[in-house]
Image (cartoon, rainbow, N blue to C red; front, side, top):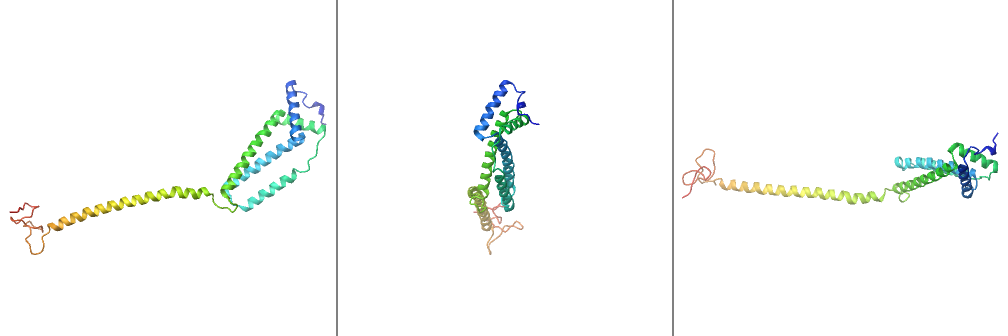
Length: 221
């Protein structure tokens, strides 16, 4: 049988003072030690639920069935938290004994409350950010930053492609001009119909006075 008088008998005077200080903190801020235990459980449940929600938003952001299931779980948790009653002295000492046996000290309970509260706040912010990213207007539209990204990143790439195409076009034009010039020069050397050709076999260039073209040693008067 539980004996309230046996709670904390092995604590040092300093530990007893710390425990009484923490007990006063619990009663002032939560109303009862039972409410503290309930708060710890709520925080743990909330963290698990938010962790699950973050994973869902990262993997299946538009799954309506999972979203409805989360809403039902949250509603059930809210109902279970209602109807709490104040406890008597024996229950307070029982809770105090639970804290000392489970956490080692009441100060560890306060630290756990603070740590879990901070983590819960961080998860709430993460969930909100993910929801705004995937559902900025509640209709599942893409984040506007994606549109901005397309406008700022893809356009320069198109400019680069266009610039490369322009350089290629300019190079082709210069090459065509060189080839045309060479072709014109060659055509100029070819002897028109009715004029003498170079005496060198297979050479059709215009012959000079010595019957050879300029390329093969011909010369003019």
